[in-house]
Length: 95
Image (cartoon, rainbow, N blue to C red; front, side, top):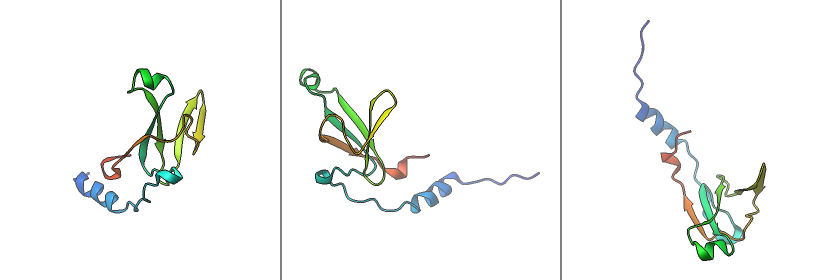
């Protein structure tokens, strides 16, 4: 039985070329494609500014917000508007 060597870098490069373009980030419409979003928690963030609430966004910009036991809000950020966001580089993420 003969095994063939596979160049992983070439495979990853081919997958990266297949990624479709993302929509623009639109804070007015609360659309943040492939982003981590953050908002401060009332009172708690006044005392400790690094503490807040985090959500993750899908490729279409919809915010997924984990607010309780087995509860996921879709496009309804629990503690107000997004204060900060970080867009993730899809080419560096391997699934």
